[in-house]
Amino acid sequence: MRDIRVSIFMVTAVLIAIGTVMIYSSSAIYAYEKTGDSLLFFKRHILFLAASCAACFLSMSFDYRRLREYTRVIAVSCIILLILVLLPLLGSQVGGARRWFRMAGFSLQPSEIAKLGLIIYLADFLSRKKAYINNFLKVLLPVFFVSGAVMGLILLQPDLGTVIVIAAFTLILLFFAGIRWEYILGLFLSALPFFYLLIYRVPYRWMRIKVFLDPWQDPRGTGFQIIQSFVALGSGGLFGVGLGMSKQKLFYLPEAHTDFIFSIIGEELGLIGTLSVTALFIALIWQGMRIVFKAGDSFGRFLSLGIVSMIALEVIINIGVSIGALPTKGLPLPFISYGGSALFFHMIAIGLLLNIAKNSGRL
Image 1: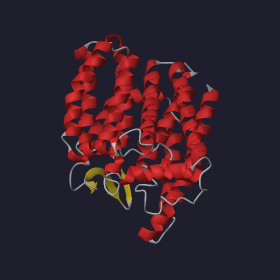
Image 2: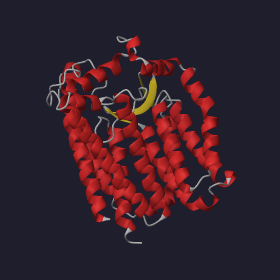
Image 3: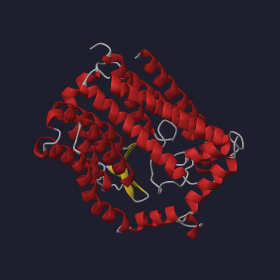
Image 4: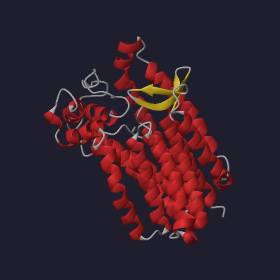
C-alpha cells in the first residue's frame, strides 16, 4: 500500500501548506490590530505544526495494534479530561463555552482528544465483539454508555457540533460492524426528542436554525456572519481577488482564520481555489477508504474507518456552514483552520492511517 501512503502524505502536506498561507493571510491584520504583532497567529501555527508533525511521525513509529492494550485507559482518560475542563478552576470559558485548558498562552481542547480516543476504543471493542454486534447487552449497551458519556460531557461545554460528529461516526462504525437496520432506525427515532430539546428549547440554537433558513431577516445581527461569508465567496468569482487581497477579513467576517477560513479561500483564490481544496479532501478520503478495505485486521479496518469518517464529517460540516448549506457550527476545517488542538490530533489521526497502511502488509 505504498502508493496509498504516498498519496495521503502528499495530499495532507498540500492541505497544510494551503492552511499555513491562508492563516497568515486571513489573520495578519486582525492580529496586528489586537496585539500589534501581525505574525502572532502565524508564529503560533508554526509551533503547533512542528509539534503536530512530531506527533504524526511518532504515531507511525509503532505497530498500531499495540493500542489495543490501552483502549480502556484511553477511554477513561478522555472522560476524566472532559470532566476536568468543566470545573471553573481548571477549564477556561470563552464566549459562554467552557472547552479549553489554557496554560502559558496556549490552549488544549479535550473534545479533540475525546474524538480520536473514542474512535480507538470503539475500533477495539467492535473488532472483539463483532460476532455479537446485535446483542444489546454485550455490545450495544456498552457502546451507547461510553459514547453517550463522551457526548453528554461535551454537550455540557456546550458543543453540539462535535457531538453530531461523534454520533455520526459511531453509527457509521456500528453499521460497518453489521448492526441491523431496525436498530439504526430505532436509534434515529429515539434521538429525535433529544434533538428537539437541544435545538428548539435552546434559544441561541433555535436562532441559528432560523438564520440558516433566512439569514436576511436580521442582516446586522444573527445573520451577519453567514451573509459576510456569502459576500466573501461571491466576491471571489472564478479566480479570486488575489492572495492577501480579501476585504471580508478586514473585521467584516468573524472567525476568518478559524471556522470561516474556507470563505476567505473563496474570496482570495476564487471558485478554482475552493474546488481545488475540496478535490484534495475528496482524494484524502478516497485514499483513506482504500486503507479501510485493504487493512489486514478488523481493528485496523474499524480504526481507519473511524478516522476517515471523522475527517469527512468535519469537512462536510465546515464547508456546508461556509456556503450556507448547513446551520452554523463551530467546527474547524481539518489541516487548514487555525487551532492547535485540532491540528495536533488530526495529524496523529493521519499518522495512524499511515501506520495501518504500513503494518497491514506485514500480516
